[in-house]
Length: 338
Image 1 (cartoon, helix red, strand yellow):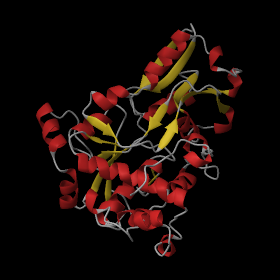
Image 2 (cartoon, one colour; image 1 turned 90 degrees about the vertical axis):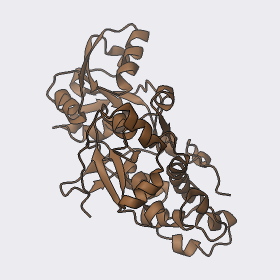
Image 3 (cartoon, helix red, strand yellow; image 1 turned 135 degrees about the horizontal axis):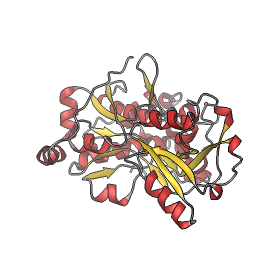
Image 4 (cartoon, helix red, strand yellow; image 1 turned 90 degrees about the horizontal axis):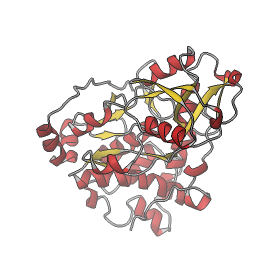
């Protein structure tokens, strides 16, 4: 299905922001018949369109999961591509219903922007990519380097902190659009490209000669990435939060898109509650009782989503690492449905 790209107007008034924040988002979404999802302008593995306008990625699947929970149909979404600079204004103004765009959860963003982070769908950290010909094997050898990055992100502050702490000189070369950063780095306008390490793995695929570049070993920050909603609408906040939790619980319980119908007859109480066979957990969210079943059937559990978008068998080739479940050495842990 071809996904429709909706242009947005940036620069809403504070009055509009306040009105949007207090609105019943679920009612608005149901009335228009789709979810407006804010995504990146193209980051493979997270939110990226193909030449036919079909979007894929971990962040896209989060939005698909929300649509499946609300409508029973994961395709009822329209996507708004946003730069890092535009993304928060678009959410605050009500232009989008949810921001699912490789966005880092920080205290400032959580407390000063009128926004709520609904979970972490990818634990990341900032890194550096350089040309192998530079002969550098550590970020501690980057003194005097020109560093390419995006404006409107946490990366600039992280770079400043890292270089100052290690008494290294550097020069920032910043652009608003991610593809502009990639092009500048590829053309040699800077020595280093810095962003989240998952982003480096994705953007490296866009370089003219990807194999001539390497990601240095240092991780200089914590970057918990996840979906964001406006403050003031607890019901919508709960829906987005529990869509992610349902995906995690499904993986932990061994419920997949392939076996979810069979699992409805399971004797395991946790599985029966997850799939709506027992209890009325959907009603507390304002959803049907098979909300989680629809997510798993149409989108999959968290492990399925990870493996098809960024896992070892994809071009990004990212091991689960911190994003493994808590009982397999990772940080992904969901509260129970009960």
